Image 1 (cartoon, rainbow, N blue to C red):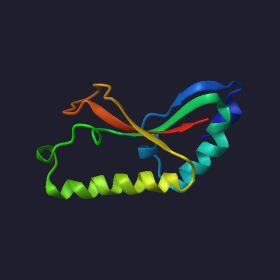
Image 2: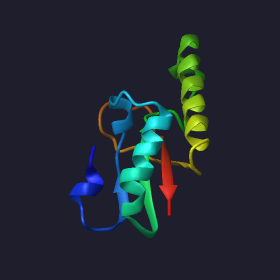
Image 3: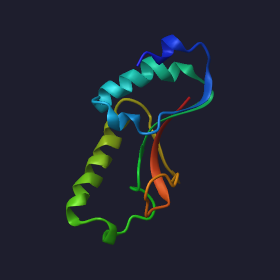
Image 4: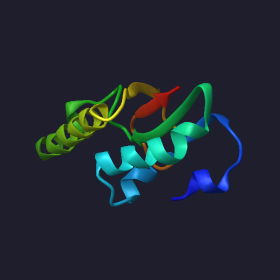
Amino acid sequence: MNVSQRLNDSFDFIYLSNIYNYLSYSPKSFSEFLKKNLYSLLKDRGELIFNYYYAVAGEIRDSFFPADAYSYMSSISNECHGFNSFFDVQKYEVLASGYGASYFTKNLVLSLKK
């Protein structure tokens, strides 16, 4: 978690995948971590993708999700809005990596741009 102390370079692109999902951080704590440790490592016009949501964007169809799954979609929406209260989050769709079994072709990423 002390990335900025271990790296002496700047980067055009930093991709954290979905590491946020494996940490026990709140959006506020994770936002503070990003600002303190990673944002400063970006070059001008650099980008930091700090989270992605698998199969929640693009081709979602009612038939793939049971009714109780919509609470999951709601929690994703709330989380995205939570990050927005700490910095200007960019949200956009990317092609799915194909890793694992996916019925969808797009994922949603959250990004910070310098």
